[in-house]
Length: 312
Image (cartoon, rainbow, N blue to C red; front, side, top):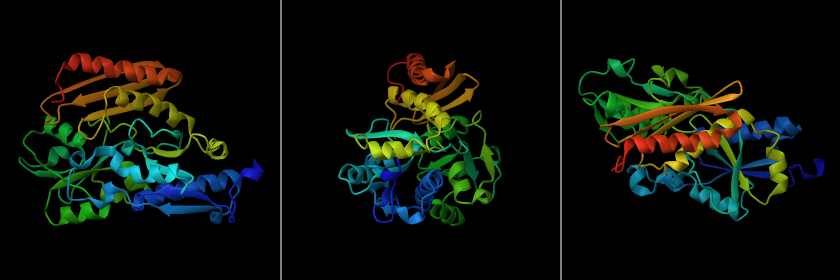
């Protein structure tokens, strides 16, 4: 293994988006590899790649191509050898990787909950009748419309700082962010409250960081095996199988969360109509190592209960 380790002369190139959160995730991956192999910082090079999803901020994601907008250019760089690994927020990742790439390394998962953010109100229940809530997440919008049909929902994109500025300018009375992101950025004070999964089931893979590599790159596979978090991998196997069976995209409001309890895995899932007029939820338990089967079975159950045309 020592002959295959990165060096300052031959650094491992880590591809990432350029946002503050994405850079934190890339640095955390570098820190994990440095600690695992007692390597210096300059044995790694962080390569910032501009992605379409970050360059187009004035349109809803579903209008310009969905989840692949945050990964396409990075995966192209991985395929052409410009970078060695790519670090991603797993909730942004399509369920199928391009041919020649694989996602089989996950860092320990952080807080899965959504954060309620508002300069004036402490929680969803505190919002007055007809208040305006901004969100770019179809899942959050549908969940909120189901619970509070009186609220006005508006498109709300941008990084944490941009969204906070929009709130201060009165564009909306409240928004939602991921607690994991706020924690990683040292900005937990931004959250007025963290929303329990029982109240608002999070996005599939929320709070998880994935490291993508070339399938044929045995050297990198060996490196990443030392920082892979097994529990996170088992949980995401169930959640992403659930999402894949539902053909999840930015046009389908889907929530899912797997929890490991001893030798058992408990998966909760929810599908919603885009306008929040109806939802179908359920859960399944089974052996931890059968997570993908559990995910597919729960998806099939919810689809059967929802009936044809549910997402129309």
